[in-house]
Length: 380
Ligand code: CAA
Ligand code: FAD
Image (tube, rainbow, N blue to C red; front, side):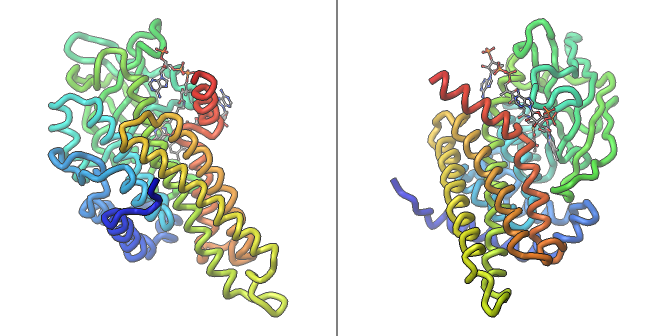
């Protein structure tokens, strides 16, 4: 067993750290206030290879492993979780989904553009009446011979307003339940596709989240991903990898808040000494340090499982469950350590606290991760 990062991994982590410090940190408060994220920053992340981290270079990707992916995700999330969710969706839901399950033609036409960052992707599973209960979706994709006719509504879609290509999960044969579901590639210019207004959110406010409407959208048959009826399995397998990305995002948010709290504890004085010398504060820092380290081990284990070709459904759910709970708990503590200063935007911890909440909700809530984990351990 080796707990050391390789030289290459350290270089990748440091490059992401440098980018986050120099490019993401300036303006992060303003982006959060204005709910925006500039194309210029997306372009810079693309140039660094962050939009197709794990994709084979023959499809325009960076050809890195999952450990590199989580290192990059952690560093970006320490500063700006809105940037990292864009990276996470494009990498582990869209690019991975296409690389692992798409046809050669789909990879050439779509993956190459997504992995290079020339185009952005979105993953569309959730619906107004089907979030956690993903099999009960109502969006339909009726087989019309050489095309499918898509009708329905998807909500909460990350990158919804800026994406070029959308992976859409829809019901083709309701009688077959989860085996009647398919996944499709929808292009933003297809007739009948509409993007609704941007959601006004508690956290990750720089990330754009939209409701999407599909009104008689004709999707060519060649845009179906995988065999007929394989769409739900596609979504579940893809989400297992996505959950590693969100676990790394939660880890980064927690680590970012911890670093700020530690620094503050060494300079802020009360009752004639630095607040870190008061045991109540010191113990909070000890808990943060310990639980963040435990979260990091779970995240790394899930990434390692994926790199080793092992099954990572269980380890990714455990990593996401634990890291997101740690992120929420300790960003609240980081605000507490900052006192009144924690309550204002300039000190960053209130934003990290708001951003932490979403990691317990998307890509399967904490309750859903417990369903995945408990089913797995009871079955095995
Ligand atoms: N791999 C392969 N197949 C899988 C699978 C997996 N990981 N998980 C389930 N399946 C298969 C099952 O084996 C089953 O097939 P059979 O009938 O042949 O046995 C079929 O899929 C249906 O599975 P279940 O019976 O387990 O389905 P369920 O209705 O009980 O739901 C669930 C399972 C785990 C709760 C699932 O619905 C789920 O994960 N819900 C959460 C949805 C979610 O995570 N949404 C995220 C949206 S994307 C997003 O959020 C992005 C973002 O924010 C940035
Ligand atoms: P519900 O499913 O209605 O759940 C409500 C509550 O009930 C939760 O606490 C849940 O854990 C609990 N619950 C439900 N079922 C059970 C059960 N069986 N046992 C115990 N508790 C249960 N989706 C996409 O497809 N693509 C995206 O890009 C995307 N991005 C998102 C971005 C943001 C900012 C947000 C807020 C959401 C995003 N989502 C996306 C949707 C997200 O995945 C769902 O919100 C999430 O899966 C929960 O679904 P729901 O909101 O319908 O909650």
